[in-house]
Length: 478
Picture 1 (tube, rainbow, N blue to C red):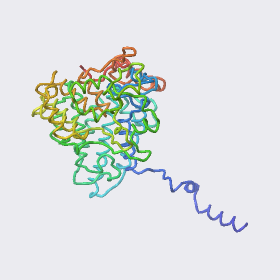
Picture 2: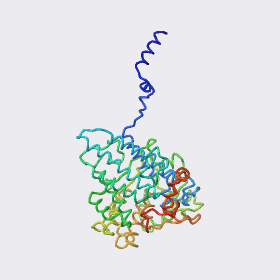
Picture 3: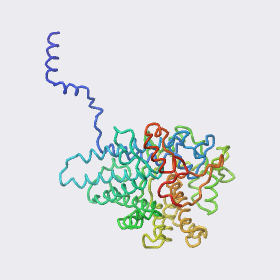
Picture 4: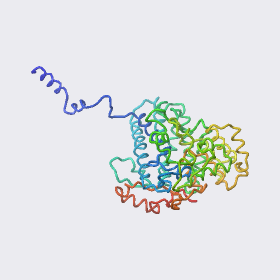
């Protein structure tokens, strides 16, 4: 016993008081997480939020009028407070994505590297900043004014809100710096750590410029932001040129990295909560659009039959569902594609921001969409030759022609469809049949904000014209 006590005493004496704490560290669970893990996690959660269909977290496929609810119709009736959808958006983007990306940025920035590895370090920081820009644009396009300058201070639970136009200017500056820092001859995050592009910095540069193009076109009606300059610079820098450039993540067949639609429809057994709308089916059938067979299930023998948007009594068994392929566990999540870029270029030509032919870019957008959904070039050519689709003969202004095809192509990207419909005011999205509530211009803030961050919430809400769906994002001028 005395010998045991003596050995223990010697062991304890070898450590200072501070050193004893090291005995409580679990070597299998490190307290510091590497930058690559943080970057991957931030990327993944951003993609997951963007494509999520769970109406506790994301309502964009309904607010874009692609789908409507069956039993529970609050969200299809544009009520986002019932389940605090704003709070889910807020938490998922700030807590699960931006905090992780910011931590990754701090780790990379603090690393001392040799001159030879400096381009790799700059590339990693550029990748992080591009994802941050994507996340903040998503927040602004949903809410309007949001915390930005004070957003990621964990010790500040009452951050100020920055206006949407200020944030757009700030993220544009950050994006420009990120694009300028990219060295396509150097590495970035590893193939496994970068879930969008596998560390291919040429693709990251295209993604950065395509995101810049999207920012420029979002503010196309805001002359003070010089949208023409933003767009022309983005195009000169090099944007997406084919579907090979698309920003998407191939979800896994194994948990927890499965497609969120699969998680909600299959794992949570909520498929019966949704049906496709008559509004969308009528649009596709009116154009004899063959993509209807890829988008929708053929579960109704009599043909595609849509539900009335926002109405009670839409019966799941009697109405059309989304195609089962979209529900597969490993179906990829898309956050930006060549089709959308092509339609933006078409509009940019019409507005005089860039030279070229609008019809060519319009055709490229349709062709890219067809290709991505498994159709042939001949299928796309036949569709484009129809009078209701051909750019020269399709009905409406250029905004309506481009807006219609951009909307159809964005079927599985509800946020983009809803956001561009708000900006272009086309297609004109429906009021809820249940109570006549019009399609909202924005998502209301989390229910906790007026309770916790009262002063800043009140100031931001007042500046917007009230925390409601009628208030508009700064770029929504139509």
